[in-house]
Length: 413
Image (cartoon, rainbow, N blue to C red; front, top):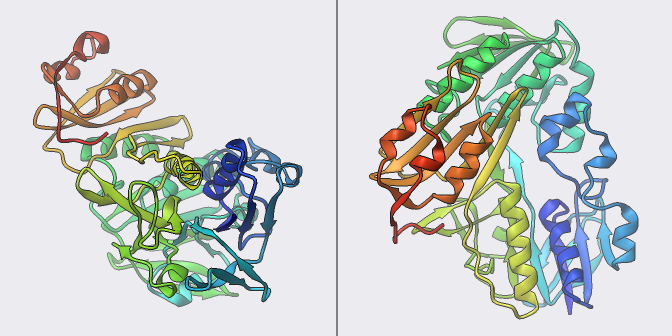
């Protein structure tokens, strides 16, 4: 049996090595569009950009491991055409590879600003790949002004690293607050205060109107509010778009702009799978897409097992993290449907946790510099708590508060 994996990120590498661990003896070939072996992306905007982690520490496995495990990897040679009927792919180099099982691990592409001209300037970047990090690093010097467009996790992580470099940092957010799509107002306020204490300027309800270019670099941003910013470098961090071009070409079913998969990560063609950021699935009656390492690793495990005939359905218990300087955010659950949030904030406010409820049922927890709250809360996601109001009392220990009253039967976790 021949396995072809499109994409060479963490999900792809994890799948390939998991197949070998499970004694799969067929051919495995990975195709990627970068010139380096699969690596971890999360450290790029954190410890790698800051210099705390070396490049060799990013790689999932070294080059020798692929050879030792008979895993073929085609770097800088992405797939450009798929034929489902004849079961082959063609690559940029013009090669043809036949497959018995095909796996999409194509990831996602950063969104750019609508104005294509500004995105083409030498000092304007998105941030997704190792090359993006290398392109940004020469600008990371004290007193230089970094403007980050987008107040999501990637932008805030970059802001924290830039302040460590001694840069002037401004975050532009179009919405009324940062973390609009992913966190409650209470979490956003806590994170805002942290970054402001680090001397990061956060400007909300702001959009770029026009800009001034000198020598192929953006020199000034003129905002719709009338404010003008003199900048040295700009990073656009306004989310990503699932990479689905090849899936569309193959007429695979998409849902919400991502490749739709079932509980075994199979697409609308049962011979074809999709894992990681490029795919979406049903979770508790909702179509969701998870951008997380956990999702990539667990879906890779599900597909490896399924290829070998072991049916292990994927029903994740989502969790995430974000390191922003001295602020470590850990998130359990998904804050999709909630009607109240209980705040648990220590004084002085160096750590906090925010507990999302739907009625009496705990649906998510944001833990900020509070690993105990994360670990405790994670165990009770989907549980109705009899005394949830006591969470606001920081003098009460969590173990005395978190006693389940009833187990919610309609929330999949």
